[in-house]
Image 1: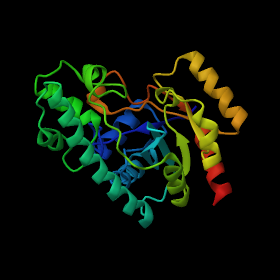
Image 2 (image 1 turned 90 degrees about the vertical axis):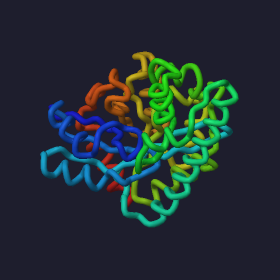
Image 3 (image 1 turned 180 degrees about the vertical axis):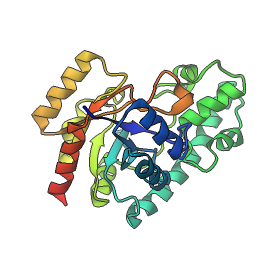
Length: 274
């Protein structure tokens, strides 16, 4: 049986692997298909697809858009998007600027907490990729402020942490609409981390088409719950490891192996709406 991992990041956002390295690791893991869903950027998609063709790994063009709903951070995955869509690319420039602004605000909060982390140290780690909280966590580790990235999220920058900042000014409805206009299938990422299951039917009204049911942080009871919700709401089911590479060593490529039939269902749904 062929398997897929539909939630992987590269160093064009907060992953540790280049697109080429990611594809090779996927091949070595025995995956038939993957999706590169970097945060708020599609810059790694072309390279990943080229590497995939060379190595015999199907690479599904994707993205993970960051949005908000009632001051709650929400991540919307987009599968089979046109990564050259001009409206999408224009919007991503705005999101990239929002991310930079967010880093300054988080660093200001950290300083108020007695942690003098300089924004430049965060941007240096991000290089040319979209900058995010994982870069802050790495910078905190490099600066000796904490022991590991997990501690950074638990102590400072997690969704309920004292240095957390939302600030994306991009609604879930907008994210779903943007993905669909770029020819993609919008799927709610890791619903367990949202802590707002009551939002999901609302997102379906916005045009949401799928739910990431299989995810490392989902217990079996959560999987059962979200499977039933997807069935009730008529949503596609997806899954992935959310691998970021060496930054989160416990999350490996292929930790979630989705039977290829789920990819086929995504393809069928996309064909039906085009």
